Image (cartoon, rainbow, N blue to C red; front, side):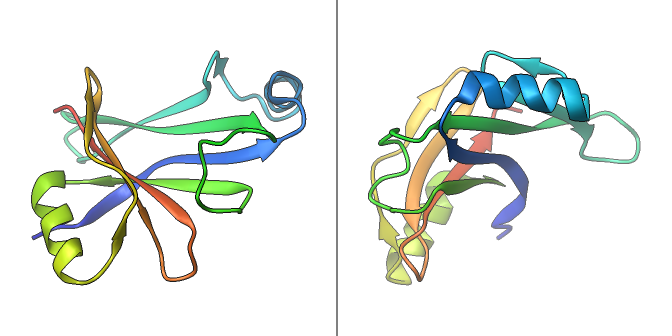
Length: 125
């Protein structure tokens, strides 16, 4: 079974997310949106499966990364989230919450070996 298939997003805390987003837009040319920036790419060489990676600055006071105390969180793209979670449970991985489903995919959070919160995302195909 495939597990991680790519990076779905990079999230980090900062003092002023709007200012940080504007700085990256101005100085590094990121095509920003209200959520940060979305990088589109193709999963296959035949360019039939479009994918994306999200870059998002969060407020330094966000509780979204809890229970981790780190200033970052990585989102990994996965296939078959339900089966993967069952496998991770048998391996003793800490599951933080339950699967949530949105129109753009399914999400769940786990903790890695050092207590960093990790977001797993199964995109809608």
